[in-house]
Image 1: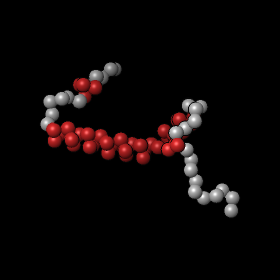
Image 2: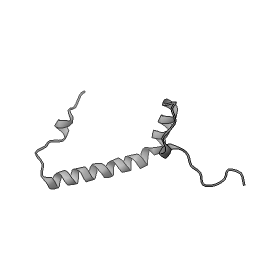
Image 3: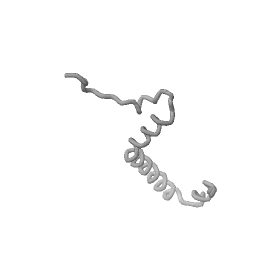
Length: 66
């Protein structure tokens, strides 16, 4: 099933509605990123053998050996 983006996002909305829609989508994207971060990282680790971006690298401020 192919859905055109233009069908989901009509242009005939008010400026205020557009603002609230975009604001909602930004917050939704952030929540999805937080909620599914571990799964996304695991997927990247398992499926992409290239170096990971810095933000996906495991960083530990505590020494592993005491």
